[in-house]
Length: 284
Image (cartoon, rainbow, N blue to C red):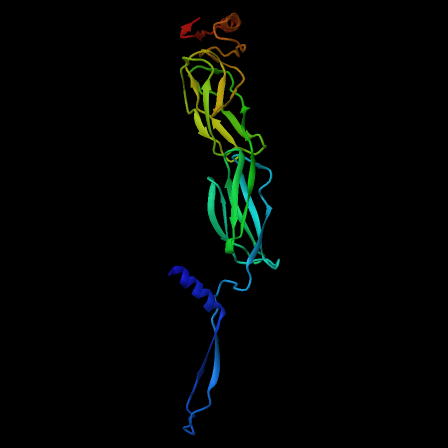
């Protein structure tokens, strides 16, 4: 029944109805001769004389990297006679990723699909559909785009129980674009270390995240470890020294010969000045 009504509608949209009416003369009281009146029935909003015959991709499907937004995939639609197809409904979809989304072409027969993000590299099938069953199918080739991490601001030597300097990490995709809204986590290169502060944050639109409230309570030499999923990067080494020792220790392993020598040097210098220093909770 529905198919019949649609078929009937198409016929009605193209036919002209004719009928004759008769009216009585106002003065003579006689009936006038019949006059024919044509009534045209139009299917407004659709062009019944032209059909879509061609769909082309103007831009947007080349040089695509995983995790990055494709700002615009631009499509041009033409009728079978080669003229633009304005204000036509076009459906775009990417299998298992995007869509289907339907948009209308502009007055030039062009339509854009915006801000499409494909997170996995590989070949992804897309489809564009117009009216009358016109379909454009192809593959979008998405390149691998791993994240790279960089310490913009390295950790500096600090006394235990004092706030470490601001540590800044940036995440950038291999393609060069900034990695926004990625969760970056900090860890330390040694087990059993007592430290506090916010260690997980999301990158901003520049791919940057700032850690500014880290506090260590145990002296020693450390490296921070910035991580995103399976990607990680170590910072330069920094030293956490005992309160009262104001000398910048050498970058060396805690408890090593080099650290002991650095401490003794600091001890001698402070004692010469008449100060008392503390190291690992003991006064010297």
